[in-house]
Length: 623
Image (cartoon, rainbow, N blue to C red; front, top):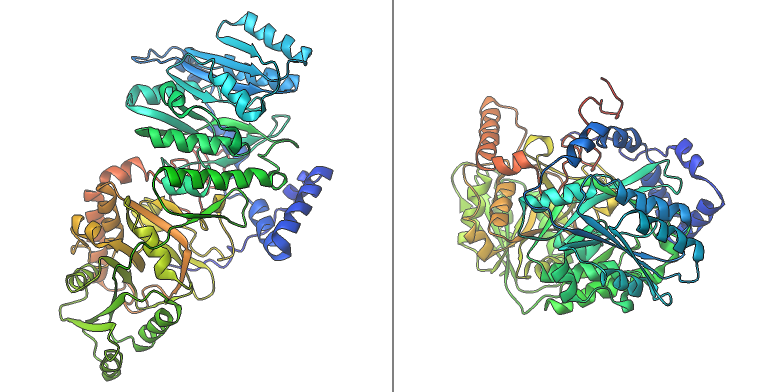
């Protein structure tokens, strides 16, 4: 893979200067104090880099036109549940209040109700606006509270009003797109077993003159939810589940929605996702959407919400803050002392293997492991001399694979001789960076629902080689954030937080032996390419999770010992492996990776927008 040296990025100074005002300057100083000069500079680049596809024109082309909206209004649903929208209101500026209610009145799906709990009984002007709308439309109902009950109390008061089979919560200063409830109802019509569903979202300026920072989400992702409240808005859930979990809890104010979502998810069966931007989160000086550093109590509440979720689900874990506020790390302590077998294929490469083994010895505190070197037709005398040397270590065995190179078959052969209950597939051209790397991977992999764990791999120049795999990137599958500097965190910090993915690379991958055997091991028809992706997809098919854990890092030279795909036979073999993947995994290739988003590019590695039909790669209309 070619290295792009321009990925360090450039600040778009004009866009940054446009944002400058006394408030944003104060905000910038808070971030500078929090991160320090070096990290602040990195994040400034990430925030104000030129967008490959600018979101503004993309969004304008993306939203449904009047013809489409009218078509939605005429749609006849076979199942059209009443959807309640609960709003906790408190001292809401009139313009925000009217715009929020108007966004409901503009909905193309008509079977809804708006339940507003007004926590500002003294605000007569606000009450007059609410009365005006309630008199205009019987679907709008208002409850005047005796006093402000706080965010949790006001929200619960609104939830007590709901009559719909499903209900969602809308902040009093935010907006729904006109097709929000239509898209949700259409999803529920096609998935009547769904207990909840959430949408994508973006942010909008106070004056509604600019949409920015789209949050394009994956389908339900347990480990991402434990890293960050990515579901957030707009989340609609069955009323019966809301009643069962008991609404919001005041002790989690600041992260009350994260705690609420966890408890709903724990009780729910299927949680669906509509990959459309349907919720607009307004940013202003009092909004946590634009001022996270001012609400440290909220991030501490978020940490406690994750801890409470782990405790309820019987999962031992230690939750800590990351440098990026609102994003968390969960560490899962190792249970017991199971054996881990490290399987390393090798041909001739003495120096790479030596560096790999040295790094394992230096970085590994965990004692119960063995290393299997699978020797594959080496010819140099020095490598066999080195084998004799390392075999003196009781933890190391050298096994001989005498057939032609086949990565899948070699690793399957290694597993047959492995003693461990956990298998750690490792390339010979990697070196471990992270101390206690085995403990981190093992604790993650021991979780009942997890089948395999992958890690962050770096090139020697400290750019990223692998931060998880997405199916469909580059045609079949590709690594994310390739060539991005390792000190960058990427789109919504995805390079640096734990999350579930469809696949990870076997250059460093730990897998439960039971999961490996249930999946049938590596597919030996895939001698070189995609065998790890195929194995991960087979493990996913059994219902187990594939976890990307960036807190384990290794340097990787990437395919140093195999050589280039430069012969006719190698090119033909590669094409055959592509055809195998297309034949066996056509559904995910056709429908899209559930841990990605249909609005994201399949030709870029960095979560940039996919240009819409009629747009060029820069988001400009070429029609």
